[in-house]
Length: 430
Image 1: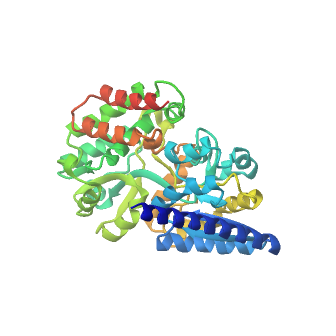
Image 2 (image 1 turned 60 degrees about the horizontal axis):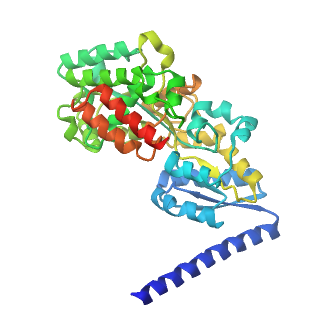
Image 3 (image 1 turned 180 degrees about the vertical axis):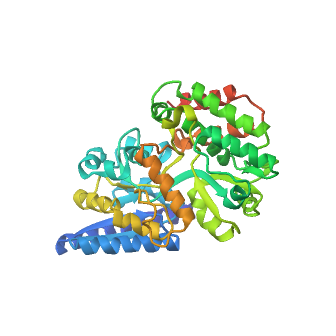
């Protein structure tokens, strides 16, 4: 056993030296050639994503012949496993994708491993292109640390056949939505297709309501990491009250607590559900599997506070810059290239929502469904209404919130107890 351990240590040590020497040789080569060489690690390993990234790099190098990109593709799990150790040891990339939240970006910021790009974002116009709320979601505690290339937004996919049959319109207020739900239920259809076995789906159901019932300042306070009773707000209790009332009225799929997310999607494709609240990531599967025309709209705000329109979502995993890089200027130039409209169009033309808002109708060969999604994304970005995936505010918040929302929707706890559990989790960390 000792011999095996010794051999493992030798192999690991030699590998580390080779890795470090390899990086040194690359940097020596670039110095002699006069070109800046940027090493990039990303997790766009799927075929469509990979082809877009390769085209982006090809275009960037053509515009910047003095910069060469060396790209390494990893799965997200592999990236999380090796990234921090590599950056701390000095063998990591110049640019990397780094997940938001306490467990990843928070740890890197606290260890002073990535560049603060707040001033850079203002000077280069990223705030105007991407919106302040979007950039904040790409960063940490109000500061900007990177830029994302793709975006995500949660809303209602809806069965247009059912809407036409029942003479329903896309609701413009929360009150309109509740009238739609009642009409669909009365007609014998399932109002909201839903499965809560996985827990995170219930987070979206509650959080979508929570987003439109709280003000921008209240929502930002909850996600600020500052001390305070943000989660105990009367608006959060009201959102839980609405959710409970929908359960009691039978607006969700029967026995939803025993149904997983993938199975609930399959149920939606059968055509007897009017709505399904989820993210734009499902659009490709819907295009393939739904035998009916599908649209997309955001959960609307109450009539009395329409200015509160906000959407659960945000940017995908952002690209950040290693603080130890010797090529800060070149790295910033690449991130700036990622925020251009021409770059965003590449993602959109491959049916992936870009982080940079594009005009609906401007994307080549976009389906009507994708145009709906683009329009919704544009709407919230123009009014600084892009919200959050709330589960990353503490390292344990996902587990706490998914468990609490399952109990809430099973009518096992009250709305007051529900928000108290969220506040207690927040207090433990902050």
